[in-house]
Image 1 (cartoon, rainbow, N blue to C red):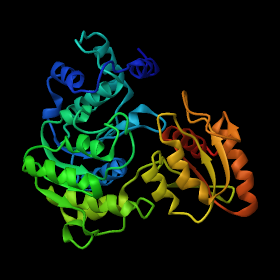
Image 2: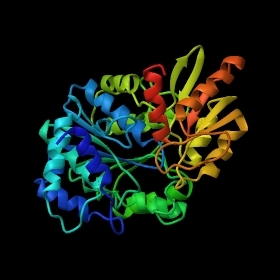
Image 3: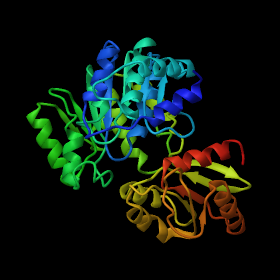
Image 4: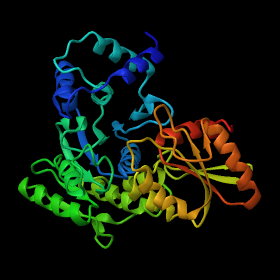
Length: 383
């Protein structure tokens, strides 16, 4: 089997029935419980999860530890999701896992995310990871990543309006689902506010989990170095990561290097094309779009999204500062949001570049990480 065939099979796996842990637990049992081989930090929340993992990963690397990092989605290649101190998971490891999985007969056929999670945990065990930073998918309590066994810390970044339909239809329901991943006695670091904070306090108290609330004045959340990732909103993510690392016992030098050296492609990532600044960001829900828009005074907007997202809510924050707008297809099944619409994101970008070269404003491409991944592929090869 070739790598592309393995990916095609993985992408074709669809979860059947309601959300739940049964599928991934069946996989992990069949693999000999690889999730027991490493100490984990579980990172949940509506926004900022990938950035927190990026800071943790960089600190693990700075400390010289064998580690694993699991994030989603990827931008260009599936292998980006599963990283260790040795780099991205090798293609042959993905192929071998798919060949094994295809030969299994599970009572509940696992979906794509179940399989990807189990593969990540298996790979972390095989490379001898001491720590793993694991980003949750949708929600928390019923998310496949909640199968982690040796949980040292939970980071809950925030609670906002995303995946409302899947998680109960209200902010309180979203908070309850994410807080459902809090474990008995396991410390929780959080930046949650408002309605969500009340839920998190309640669950943490019931489960006797020490709760650390983001406070820039608290030395636990101090920044020993400026965070590498762009955007004012990254300060909160960096403070959460710094607090998590201190609670885990990491040295200040490793924490500082982690903040300085973190990388998270596609999150307010800047490119310079023909003298024009092009920013890529995967903001796909209203809170993320609101934070992103605050970073600019004006821009040429390139936008693409999927129908399951709150497109109107996202655009309400982005359009007021947009001098011009172009819509592009974010990927298979994406929405035709408005006009002018480009089937090919490359054509949309080229058209936006013409306008930006005339007035000097930057281009902001956002709405979906799938669109960002496509554009990043073009920009890294310079169109």
